[in-house]
Image 1 (cartoon, protein in one colour):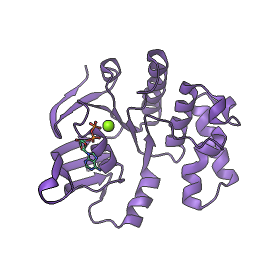
Image 2: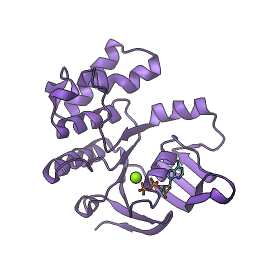
Image 3: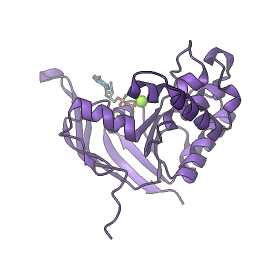
Image 4: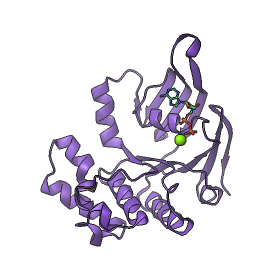
Length: 233
Ligand SMILES: Nc1ncnc2c1ncn2[C@@H]1O[C@H](COP(=O)(O)OP(=O)(O)O)[C@@H](O)[C@H]1O
Ligand SMILES: [Mg+2]
């Protein structure tokens, strides 16, 4: 039996912005292979290219050079429509700010990734949203709007939204950066539990050393290069 494809593979990824004399290279030959089920922390100083890297992995931005595989699919030759489809099928996103829509309830917000695909919120999507909220033990928030929730509750809803389409890979850019330490620990704990229970692969950008030590692996990016890459004991 061949080895299963890793969830994620980057080969010599470069990214530059601008042209001519104003051109700046932000990522330099980044190589990274993430096996299925791993929870990887990405650390590094502000401006080192962490968000740029996550946006490329998330198919929100294209690399200037190099190859990127999501599972079996090499993405450099995909059209925008194919990239959008692959993103919807395979990827979930959590950001520093929850980006919940204020006019919608938690269940409607969580259903959004499914609604975007089908063009409308179906009953099936709302049922799946409730199931995702239940997974995070917050089904009681289903009918509340973001203004009626605490910061930690909102970020849990954002995690439920990332999971609703059953992605193989969740990308989280400082997902607890806006929370107090205790809430941050709890929300991270939920992501860790989901990673273990569902074998979902996570790539999490964090500045928090204590959280990084609860991951499987820590990759440090400095000036757009992988400075170190170690397994956590
Ligand atoms: N759209 C853009 N145009 C030009 N420069 C950018 C753009 N996005 C990010 N950068 C630059 O790329 C570098 C890395 O940014 P970023 O990936 O946001 O770093 P980090 O997330 O590690 O703080 C920074 O110097 C930033 O100014
Ligand atoms: Mg960033």
